[in-house]
Image (tube, helix red, strand yellow):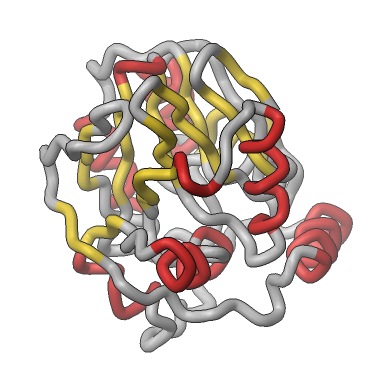
Length: 239
């Protein structure tokens, strides 16, 4: 699905995976669920492109609903996913996320999230392989020249990805625009966050980022700009 020029989403906004499309090729942000592999092919085909045009995959963190087709992309195309080293054990499924940081839960949104995940391969996630580390402030030499911003809290290695070429900030689960556990909409802290206070502190790095599109791991795209998104998240966290 086209969001803006050079900016596309695959799958549903229940679980987001994004494409940055430039004249140099495609950078994928997050690998969603394993079933997104077919959706990736379909979206590329609609753009007149193929898997041969994919140059990079960046993982915002190592949770299972973000690494879905990472192993397959590495196996078939030799594309090793960029990931902060603090989340590498998580992406390799060597570390299981503790059952903390859930916050409020409503049965219907949770059931919908679990059903959607199961339909798209979420019950059998292959561990990510061929990972390559990225550091805070690093600008990658891949389509879009994405800049990595380390924003720990949701997980130790969570990063935000700023891509000025498409006027976008990819947040992973640093925040959400639709809480998968409650259905609440708008920029808010994400559930399943290991260190909520640290996640809010990490927003300091994003408050002055010049980006119109703010794109979470879960929920619809938001075009109110990064500074306003940060303000709303902090406001929500304070209540």
